Structures are given as C-alpha cells and as structure tokens.
Image (cartoon, rainbow, N blue to C red; front, top):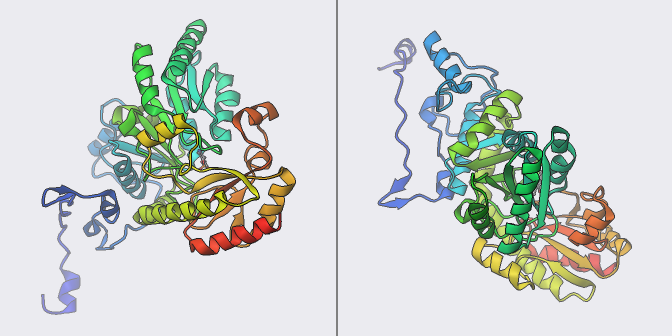
Length: 438
Ligand SMILES: *Cc1c(COP(=O)(O)O)cnc(C)c1O
C-alpha cells in the first residue's frame, strides 16, 4: 500500500483481538493493574484506547439462528445465558466490561450492575423471596434497605427477623432457629441472610464468619448470605473470602468516588447471580452506558483514592480524638469494644474514611459545628474525593422511630464524616476552626 487512495479502496481485514494478559512471569496481576484494560480490546473499536460509550438500544444479530440462540439463553431455555449482546435492557458492552472488572475486586465469578445501589438491593431481594419466606438481616441497615424489607416486601407476604450487628455465633443461631419457625408457620423458608458491615451510620461490624458457620449448622438447604460492603469495599473487606455468597455495593460511594453518579452492583458465584440476572432482564434497572463508562474510569483510581482517603481519616481522627469538644469517635481505626475489634482483625484490612463524631452537647452544638465547616461540605452520601459531613438523626435517619434510633446509638450529637482526598492538614484546620465556634 503506497498512497492514500489505495488505503481507502482496501478494506481493513478483521483482526482478532489479542489474548489478554492476566498473569506475567508466574505472577497473577493485581486488580489495580487489570483495571486499565481487562475485558476490552481496542482492536475491536477502531483502536480507541478507552472503550467508546455504546449508545444503542439494540444489537444486530449475525443471523436468525444466532438471534434464536441468544433468546434461548436470555429466557433460560438453555443454560448459560446469552452468548452475545441482544438488547440494552439486558446488557451492553460498557456494562459487561464494568461487570468483569467489578468481579475481579471481590474475587467473584460474576457481577451485575444496576442503576443505583437500592435497585441492586431490591432486585436481589425480590429474586430470592417468595410469599411466606423470611429474610434474616443484621441491624442497622441503610434506612432504605431496612424500609424495603419492612414496608415493601411485607406487602408480598415476606417477613423478617433481625439481629444486632455485633451478635455472637450463639445469638445468630437463636435468631436463625426463630426465623425457621417463623417461615414454617407462614409456609415458606428462610430465603436470605442479608448483612451490612460496617453498618450505616454506626460503623458496627458483623461477624461474617460466625454467620456462615451458623447458617451451615442451622439451615438444611442453605440460603445465600448477602452483604452490603459499601463502606469498606472493594479495598478493605472481601466478604466472599469470609463466607458470604453475594457482595452488594452502592457504587455511588467509594467505587464511583467523585460524587457525580448513582449506581449499584452485586457479585458472587454465577449460580447466585443467575436468578437476579433473569429478574433484571425482566424489570430493567441495569446501569446506563454512560454511567458504566464513568465507573470504568473510577475503577482505575479506586485503590489510589481509598488509600489516600484512609490515611487522611487516620490523621483527622488522631486530631479529633484529643479535642476537648469531642465526646467520642465511631472510627474503625480506634475501636474500644473487644468483640468489635476481634471482628475487625479477622475481616478488615483498613479502617476506611467514614466515621461518626460525637460532639459534646446535642443537636444545637452539632448543627453549629456543621454550619461552621468551610472545606468539608454539608451533604449526605460518602466515599467521594471531597470531605462531606452530615447529621444522620436529622437527615438520613430522620424517619427512623425514636426508640430504634436510641437503640442503634443514632444520637442528636452524632455527626457523620466522610473524609476525601484533600490535604489532611487543611482538613484538620477546618475541623479546628469549626469546633472553636461550637
Ligand atoms: C448509599 C447506600 C446505599 C444505597 O445506594 P444508592 O446508590 O444511593 O441507591 C445502600 N447501602 C449503603 C450502605 C449506602 O451507603
């Protein structure tokens, strides 16, 4: 080929994608390396280094027979799901790359992405629960998760039993036995054990290993153990290694990490994902291509961001701990309770950057502190590059009844802080001047 005209006339031969590198010189590549390319070959997209955003509602089949095979997979007539892309309610290239990369962080076989954390949680629960069934869950949960179980699933004859986050093996055994009796009396089964650890907003940890041992000893037909890992995952807690079956995320938080999108995911063995995928195919609720693309970018820096936020939080908490206007901290790097410390040592590799600050005083003092912050923004949510502070009792947990708030330790002097990746000394200066105004 010597000149441009020839180049135009010669059709580009279809090139085969290169096999992906996942091991090198006998070492398995780490997630942070794989985030730069796993599941995408530029050769298939005009050499574009980054995946294009595939804005299409539907995908052209190679032949009518191929279309039939895809639908056999989608509808469950044939095991193994669709062999290609069919229609954008089921999946798309950006979402599939995202799902492949999410699965890597948790050591999962398969993952599914959703339009929000709550969509992931609701579709997951609906996929596993029939009328008469019981969900066993740890408490507290994110308020909307707790609300979905108590207010919505109950309309379809699904009931629940809950246990406090720090419960011991013996206490969990008792709860599971009670749940089994409850299920029997309703003509159903224990359909799911749903955990959240650390719990929002108290940071209480659940003993996943104890839950697993208890389930295996108590239930003849094991139900899945799902866990919301939003606060520490994917970096500092890998629940599938400790006996959980399904890991759940609000990707809106640390994974998205820039407070500019809303999304969710679940990951686990394919056999646990399949029923949820089938329901997602029917209901919709998959993340859109643009959000999936944003999340691919976020995943390239998730380790970097979380490490910086975690080290910032350690410095800020060391400062706050000694402050005379602070009554205490709910920070996983400074646990007082030996039972919680033991769970932490077995399950977690880092304390995260979201914690509770108990201001001396009540709502008035907490509000004064929040209103005085100049760098930290007054907003709910967490896990972004910027530091956020909020008042759970008056905001995210306003609808929780007073007795339950008291039982969970969601007090009027609790301020929740999510530390970002700013300069740590600037953050300390901000907390110092805000506390001076209390
Ligand atoms: C934010 C959050 C959710 C809900 O996620 P969305 O993306 O807002 O729907 C669920 N669980 C926890 C622990 C959360 O912090």
